Image (cartoon, rainbow, N blue to C red; front, top):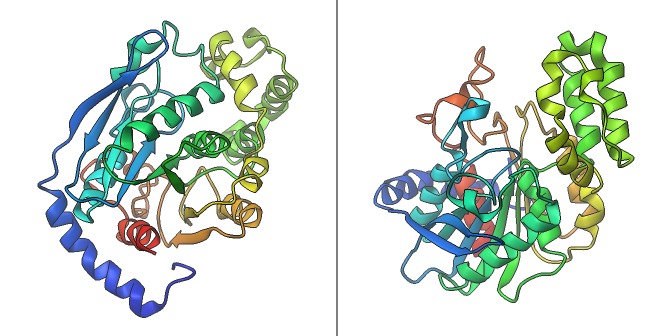
Length: 319
């Protein structure tokens, strides 16, 4: 259900989603590049003639590419590709980006772990400036950790930034969110004291010795990753959200195993001007949950986006 829209209007937009998908099938992406710190940053652009809006799609954590996939993590959803194509079907241009150090942007820095959230935010501002060639009004759509990047990028908004679209974005500091996610897995119960100790050390700005952790946790807490996590854990998304007075759309699925509706509640409280779109049955990948297959939306690119996602975004932008 979508707060702020009548049932009649919602039904109208959901009905149009099939038309959007048919038009989107003809959308073609073009690889574009902008300057990065040591080499180019790359993205996939879909231009739309006469577009009034363009969306910069910022990916979530780790090695997630501009399509929404990450082989190292077993992620193959095509979520961002489907999102860009769905937006094109609604007349909205987009650029979906590869983060510095990864995929098409791998030569932008030598070490993909040698990054900060502020660096990602600056790259996002640069992409907003590039997207201004596509439409007069540019929006940042940040998914998961990308929502934090979007909020930070908006602290120094580029001229053409019209607002934010927060897709399954955390409302809690990421360190606390990680502890809650790990605690929710029953098999982790014996290891929670060690996990909490590691996260607390990082929140305090200290590297935690990976050797002090169980072997299965060490890949999550390598020295390189910990440098980034110290920076990441220092941000409070709601504090950043309170500083953004512009338009915002908060999108949250109630079948999301990673980000919970209470995160959307926290963001909505911090941004009373925001529009809320709650997607019934949507997972973290913004697709319908499949009963008995909790991870299939992460691994099956043939599954479509949740039917309410594109209509919610387009209605928000058009209003």
